[in-house]
Length: 160
Image (tube, rainbow, N blue to C red; front, side):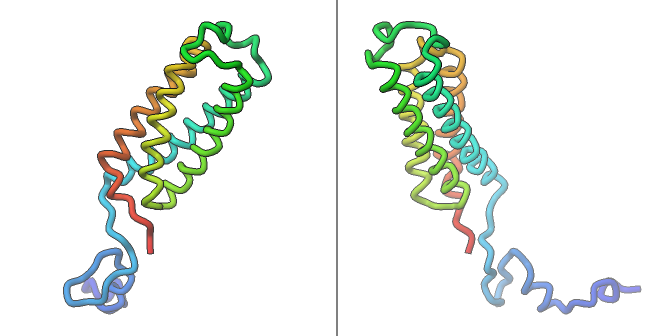
């Protein structure tokens, strides 16, 4: 039994459903992605996670002020917990939106993803004394996001 008897499709049919372009054949409808694109997808998920952490921090600052470690006058930037809370809630929602757009392959979301992670790390440094565990986790996530997008961001393209 030869291999063509096991697969009755012709070579042209097999090439038409392939993910790769064949020399001399019509271009494929798919974009070839390297295995490193997983890091950018990881960054998108981490931006969503970072946004969720910001939402939790913001809601904590708004509704559970007693759970925070220090008074507002001892923070790096002296603002009320209400101001910090709303800032974190808005920033978290924006980060979640950017993470979803990055996973969808939007090129502009890479720029905003790096910007979000950078500003998030700075905000968490300023808020670190009030909530050290969440802040340290968020900073580590932000550094990973920046690395993944900067090194492998060009490999994630919007699918045709």
